[in-house]
Image (tube, rainbow, N blue to C red; front, side):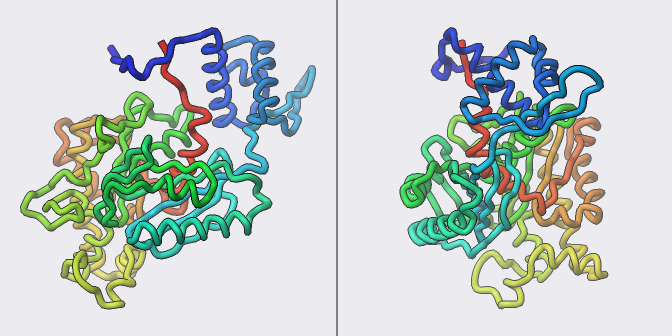
Length: 404
């Protein structure tokens, strides 16, 4: 039995059925486009006449448009339907500890322009001013893409998405920061803020369909920190205080290395990019000034060195892989997901580290089936964090409501 919080309920009205059918149609068109009215009617399990009426309304409101005509063995040729993202775009922003990335997409998350990046300014006021300037410049440069529908921003920290506040981003030194309001005021656009791990989970939920879709899964994003997003019953889990899924700050060893959050032995302190590079150099690079040569080395460089025969590089990657699997065992034991997705730079070495990750997971999992939980690597070049940021703006148009 599922408990639905009564304070979130809206009483069903005569228009509720129409609103639900509209969202169902939009989602089916989005995930199956191009699609004909006849195929849409089959997927919805309803009469073609009813679907034609619904599609007509969606065309009138500018949410769907008719495109190419298909072939038919007999009768009328079908006209295919598409989500109308023409002359409309979304700006996606991925804030990381070291650099911030910006991408422009359409309303279904397809990249429309090259990804740009710049060093992340730790001072919030300077950061906001710089980001506003860059986003405006990008929109002017790509004005042919049409009207911007909003800006989605993902942050490596705990976020109150409703309030648009960064509750705590340890690696950036931000706490109780109202990020949405100054960005929205500076850009004159709607802005949505989300935790990076949750945004990646949202992007995966948004992208998968049909037999590939999972309603219970966990998404790990391993980068400057460790973000975790949890989806149960097809819904993103937030918790009472918007910190659900913060497994990165669950300790693997209370006597372990100090984490950016101030605690010791957090999972993140063992698997982040800086932890991996620290192992390679045999010194903790988290604190204090670093020589230029050390600062310039990336996990991508480390993977290249490992492939080139550098034993130290391979050992550093395998050590991180073991800690990744051990922590993942705790996540699997707690959540029991049907699937696990992993993104981040270290996944470029998945062929080198997969066996180690899976062995450590099996070691910690409480049952053999849990230890064999399927894992899918999400390539960094697909920009999962940026796609999650874009979904913050596009996805609400297709989201379901709660009714009684």
